[in-house]
Image (tube, rainbow, N blue to C red):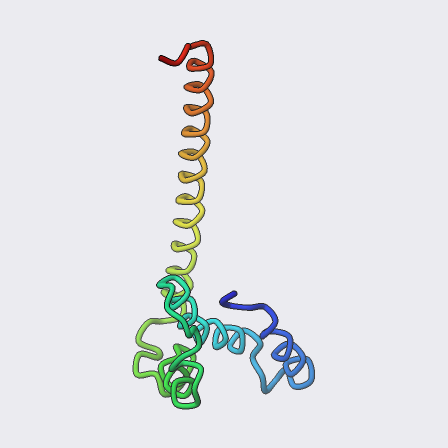
Length: 125
């Protein structure tokens, strides 16, 4: 299971002990960023799942490219207000798309149900 919530437990514990020094959100984001790699290999059906990003060098590369890292060359290119606005727009788009998908699946289900009701009285040839 990619993006396993079991990884978040140690981060929550460390954040509880030292909240000013450990960002729980950054810890969770780092776990998700690293676990994109196994997701790709799962979707492609190509084991082993844990490859480059789960090595020391790979984790370091992900950390340097991470959006919250000072090593990221794109850090502060987009203002925080623009980033938050983009997140709100993306969330709203996700809600709309989920609603459209649900309506389409309910419509298709109703169509299949109506079709099977019409076909119930027919005698096969």
